[in-house]
Image (cartoon, rainbow, N blue to C red; front, side, top):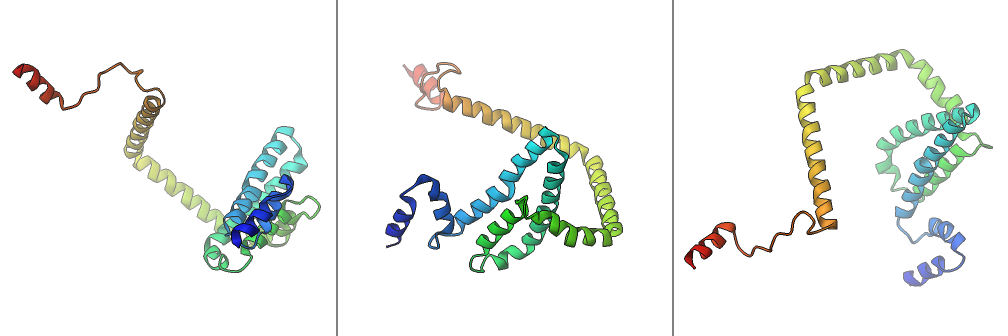
Length: 197
């Protein structure tokens, strides 16, 4: 039954397949979560890139406001997602909210920033500045105290990266490192058997 419904949803005009999958009530939230990720980050990243490269100040401001609101939403969602994800149609509402934030005509991010985020940040600016300054000084102190460990980790990651790259080359192009015969036993066993002959 479910396969027949899914088959009827997927067949037809290829341009409508995505919309049908989004609105498919039988599917899991995987499609909607992927759509939320794409609409919430992938499209805005590219739009932000275009705004920066075109040097369009109005578009830069629009996407800067979007990222401020989206970041705040993401922080709130960290704590509420486990509860809200159980609500029916949560990811549909989230998808609609993310689209609303980006629509130029609705100016959702500008509205939320102006009405809620900016007043909150202005009210708590002194406390937030102290927290940011304290955190950045603690991180700087941690990095300076643990410089040797950080250098060791960097060296180990570089070695690991080199080993993985070499292993990938060996998998892609076997036999190019040197044509060695296949050894059936350990080298000591081969040497002993040659000595016995």
